[in-house]
Image (cartoon, rainbow, N blue to C red; front, side, top):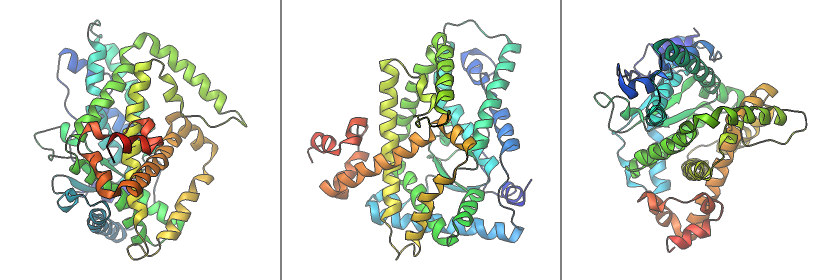
Length: 390
C-alpha cells in the first residue's frame, strides 16, 4: 500500500466507526444481508487507484495543514453566510482520510440510508435461503465496492450527516466531515496551484455543508426520509426493476456511441412512475440547494482570503475537459455530470435569492422543510421568493 494510505490508516484520522452489526434474524437482518457491506469496503480498498507517494514527514505535514485549513475556513463560512451555527461545530468531527477509509465510511452511510427501503422490499416476501442470501450479498457488495473504488479517487471532501445513525452508542450527535488527503494533494499538483490556498478553498465548500446541517437540525432526518422514499419506490417494485435496468443499460450503450449526446445517467433512466419522478425531483432540488450554496460560499472569497483563488477557479473548472473515454462512460452511468449541473443550478438560485432578498432572506430556507425550494423554484427563483413573501 502506498505511503499516503498506509500512514493515514495508522492515525486517528481514519474513521473508526464499525459497520452496524446486522441482527441475526428477522426482516431487518435479511435486509442488511442483501449487501455484504464489509466486502464492499474491502473490494473498494483493493481496487482503488494509487495516489501520490509521499514520505512520512510529508504525510504528517499535509494532515496537519488540512486540519488547520478546515478550522480556519469556519470563520469565513460564518462571515459569508451569517449563520450562527458556524460559531460552534463541536457536535461533529473532521477526519483527514485516505481513499480506502473514505470508501469504508460510505459503506456505513449506505447501510443507514438503504436499510429502511430494503426492509420494506422484503416485507411479505418469502425468506431467502441462507446460501442464496450470502451469494446475493457478495455480488451486490462487490459491485458497490467497485463503484466506490472509482469514486474514491474523485472526491476531495464530503460531509456525512448519517454516521451518527450507524451506531448511536459511539457516534457523535451530528455527522463527520471527511477530507480525502490523497485526492486533494493529487489535484493541487495536477493544477500546479498553491497547496495552502487550494486546501482552504476546498475546505470552504465542505465546511459549508457542515454548517448547513448544524443550522437546520431537522435536515438530516428530512434528507434521510427523501432518500428512503426514492429508494423505496425503486426497490419496492422489484418485478419491473430488472426490466427497467436492462432498458437503462441499452440506453447507456446508445449514448456511448460516437457522436451521441450526453445523457442524464443510466441509473436515472430506471425511474418511470410519477411517484418515482416526484421523489427524485424533491431530492434533486435539495441536493442542488446544498451544493449550490456551498459553491456560492466557495466563490465568495477573494484574494484577501485565498490569494491565488482566481487561478484555482480557472484551472479547476477546466480540468473536466481532459477526461478519458472510460471515465466519461462511468460518469454517464452514475449520472455524475447531472450532479455537476446541480452545482451550477443551485448556485444560480442562491445568488438570485441573495441579490433580491439579502443573505438573511435566503437563510429562511434553513428554518423548516416547508421553506426548501422545489425543483421548479430552483430554476426560477422568483417562484420561491413569491412563495416566501420576499
